[in-house]
View 1 (cartoon, helix red, strand yellow):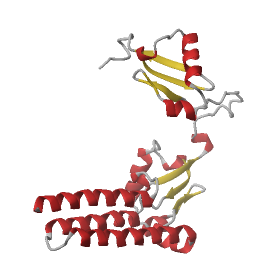
View 2 (cartoon, one colour):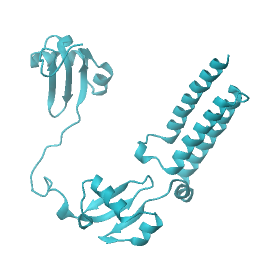
View 3 (cartoon, helix red, strand yellow):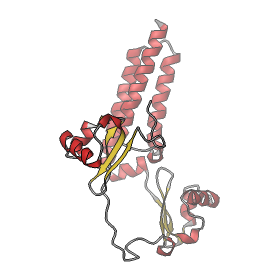
View 4 (tube, helix red, strand yellow):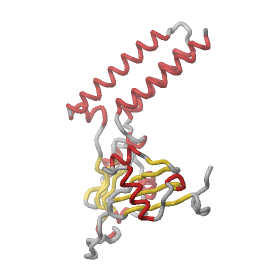
Length: 233
């Protein structure tokens, strides 16, 4: 019974973590703010205490997690609607460099040393502050950079070149099977796909390892028959 209780708490803890992740929205780890980290930290503490303290029942643990999830949801809703509270809870970007001028007071306020700043710049492929026009320290601890135009690689517009925009590709066939949901999302039918593949010289769909398609570039297909590209399991 003790092992079953522990297993149930672990399963419920995992589910609770998934719920908290959903409440936080679609964020990458680099976008998580310190306050978001506290959410998960407290939840981990609740799970740990419930696992090692046998006096805490599953229902007590569920009640604590439910209250915590409700609090998170309320705070997130308030933060979205109130900019002042959002700044307190989530923080706001700090301007470290503006128009090429380094703000040392902003660095001190954020406990940021020069070598730390240079390290973060190198991680983004910038090896000198002379290339940086504006630099923001984001609430997540990452930096956002706008370089001087002279330090940016030339674009097609700068070179007065006309470049065709490419539509995103979609995976229509994966390991010999049609991805019907993606096909429907692309606004195409199975008959259309079969007809187009025949035009490309592919009669048997099961022999196709993968097939990508885009509205601008058409098909990109690899079959199992090409040993350099694909290996059939």
